[in-house]
Image (cartoon, rainbow, N blue to C red; front, side):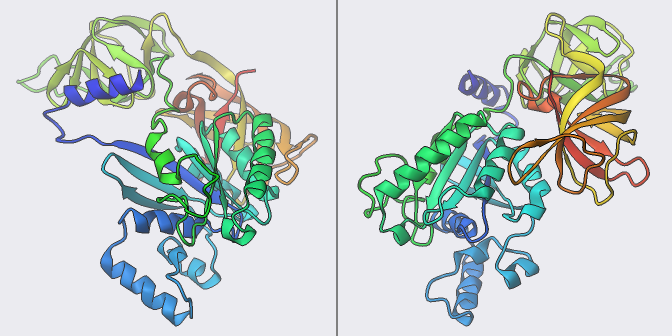
Length: 435
């Protein structure tokens, strides 16, 4: 279904773009010293995504440090503090491409105190690449990152069991770690898991197949990245079109034009379809779908288009256009999971602005239901406030009803941010869960 729609999108927009390549966003995470930066560096190097001058600079830096090999981690640890300490402390985005796909890698930090960075990087990912050291196996940080991936709904996961050379490329070690990880992932609801034995330093099973592990008959990491679905976190069933802008040219050429610009965040919208505008509940039909001066019969996620309706309705930014027979939920009481991202603690009765897509409304924290112990993954009750990087379940009441879907079904209409009204800073990212 997704491939067919992608092909129709390319055909409909043939006059606008000469070539449309698939894009896969994925996050790479792992504990400190598991070799994550080296793995990403190997992907960049072996797919020829590194410029010659940068490669020479890395080579010279490696020689000054006394490294016998090219230090691939320097291709990703771009911040000065990271280079000095040899760790990753912020989410860094790297890019590479193959003849068939483009890739965006969110390189997440491995330390506990940077939990919020992991959540940020995973929120838009279609896949998570998680590293473990073959000598250590599944550790606390592995469980933590797996939990965070399940929390934000990353649909696919790859476990790269790295440094296989340090365990003599043992199939027994690989099988033991794979069995333990899959059991843990299953408890978290992560069913789509692939395990790959690698040696990132030498490139074994990263881009090229390893001659040292003939017992492994699965794909290399790149082969797997080339084959996984790229839009698996887009809900293709429920059409949702948040209005970003109302277009009224009021010119002599278009005296009566009234369009509603935005992105189809899920599903598909068709000309002639009966729709409802929420939260007001007004009903009409789609008279036209405009895209770059061309009228389309249909538009699919994630296309950005302008809709014209058959009736003149009072519609403004923040409203959402949906099929008349497929409505999202509408409520002022929300049960949510959040990651707290501010130095100032969150307490019950505090007020913030809550924003879902273009909807923005005043909201109050009703209660803290529980906090997740990030070390044990247990739920802690009786919590009086949340600190930086805490993950918790809250009850929130909004000043007026908002439109939403369960995050597990629709990421775009089930996720939100909390904004401090005084500083206008984003203080939390959250996911709505329908009880």
